[in-house]
Length: 283
Image (cartoon, rainbow, N blue to C red; front, side, top):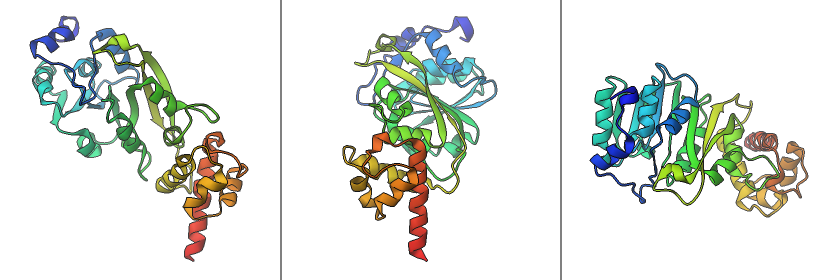
C-alpha cells in the first residue's frame, strides 16, 4: 500500500462510507501531490516526531508517513478510525492514533519536545488550537514548527503587518516571539466538499522571546488594545489599570494612535512597561 501503489483517497473514503462532517468542520483533500507538498513545508521529516490534528481519512497522514515522519494523530470522529488503522498496518511503528478531542490532549506528553505540528485543522477549532500552541510562559515551545491549514482570511490575520486591514491580536500573538509566513494557497476546489473560501497553509517557527515580557501580560495588553479597536490607546488601555500615556510612550507612539497602527515591538514594550508599573505598585 505504500508509495505509488497507495489506494486513491477517494476510494478509501467510498469504501469506508465516509462523508465530511460539517459539525466537525471537516474538509478532505484528495490530491496526493498537493498533500505531499504540504508535508514537505516543515523540511526533512525522516525520523522526526509529527503531531496531526483531525487526520480524517488519512490523506495528509499518509503524506507525512511517506516523508518518514513518526506521526501521532488525534481524531475525534470515530468513523475515520478504521481507515487510519489501515495506515498503521501499512506503516508499522510509524503511526499512533489517539481517539479523542485535540482540545483535551496534552501534546507535550504525547509527542515530546521538538515535534513538527502539521495539520489541515478543522475550521471550528483551528484558531483556538493555534493560540494555545503560541501561548504559555514556556519558550521555546515543545514544537519545532507549525504547518497549519486555515481559511485564507485567518491566514492573512496571522501574518498581517501593522496598519493593514487584517492586523490584530492574532497577528501579534503569532509574531511577537515567532516568525509566521503563508507557505502556499489552496483553492477551494482541492477539498471535498469544497469550502466557500480559499484556504492557505501557514508556517510558523519559534523565535527568541523578548526579555522581561510575560506571555500573560502580553495577552492582556493586546486584548485591551484591540478589544475596542476603533478607540485610541488612551481610552482602550484604561482597563489595564495603568496610565495609558505612559504605556504608549514606552512603545514610542502617541496615545491618540489606534492599536492597528502599533508595531509588534510597541506591544512588547507596552507589556514590559506594564509589568514594571505593577512591580512598582507591589513594593
